Image 1 (cartoon, one colour):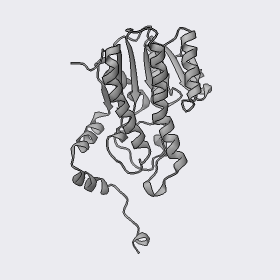
Image 2: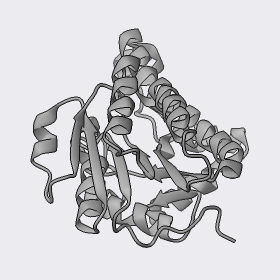
Image 3: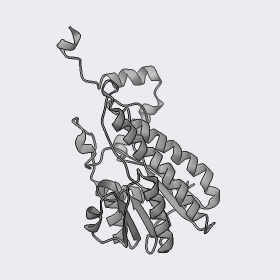
Image 4: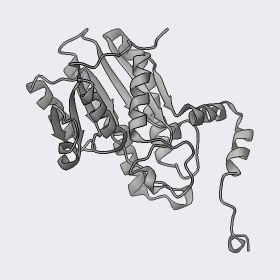
Length: 264
């Protein structure tokens, strides 16, 4: 059985892509526009949105870290009769950091953008959707496989995405009775400005366009969790099943060896 109603036809659907300036969000906005959806593209800067091809039905500049921006954006969509049928919540930041080098400002920003902003957006969109109860809607959270289990250099990012996935699970359970479907997207490594920060080999890395296609295939199957590329994510799912002792032993083997100076 499908976890959600299947979405196979995007023609005429109003879709809001939050975080559409680059990466997966941009690829989703362009792919959905090409498939006939009326796409509302949002990001902090307007310039990248104006270069989307095909052009979106509406570009809406906002900073998801500002609750007032989100409230104003949703009010604008209501006034323009553009309340979305589907929301893709793609906005996020990534600051690689180890526990011994925590930057608390970056930690705070990570949770504000990757997690808390999602709560704010969901709260105000649910209030708007409540004006037309029973109309089918869909909210798709873009999380990350980094939230599956503790990973080196992901002290803040992985934790923020684990929290987002938890919210996705709860919202799926609670909103189904209100005709609001919820899905969560768990990408592996995708070629974006965020992964450019990594200084290690990223296995099975894919393009944003491939990520967008995989996301829409998952929605067409009615999946709750959409994860890709499977040749990578299935291994991470297996790691989640391991007892802590074995998991920690495996993960320690991936850490850089201490230098002779550190051992002296």
